[in-house]
Image 1 (cartoon, one colour):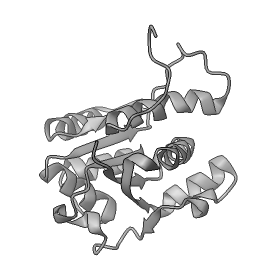
Image 2 (tube, helix red, strand yellow):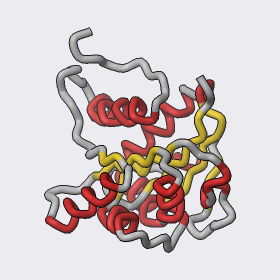
Image 3 (cartoon, helix red, strand yellow):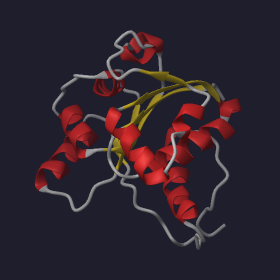
Image 4 (cartoon, helix red, strand yellow):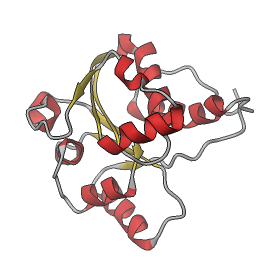
Length: 187
């Protein structure tokens, strides 16, 4: 199996726990990964600090890029990043991607992933949804993206908030194509 090059974008939607657990899981799966590039919005930093009471994103061993750094490798298709995960994905970010607005590194990278026919996974974390959100999800899906709502499952009988959030993160890991040990239905 060839190693993956993954872009992770963290936006300001509620759900910093998903980003935290996802990045921790990527560290555990590092033998399957060639490179991880991270871009984090200012709002994402604020939400992380508020929801998780820390700035542990500073301890993540992957390379971070400024949201305006259009020299980041994944701002171009020639860098051959396989997958982009936006976790959590705000409806504003989803809307900009759906309308083709590439006004920062998150939306530019998503545009590149779509145009190169690679894997874009948006972990949407808002509810309820209005018709604009639904139509934007349809547009991104028709363009080749995957909408993966942060809808936890409970059949694994999670015992903590982290366990509940990990049911979403495990599904996202599966969608990236990385080999992952997690609860499997009827196994």
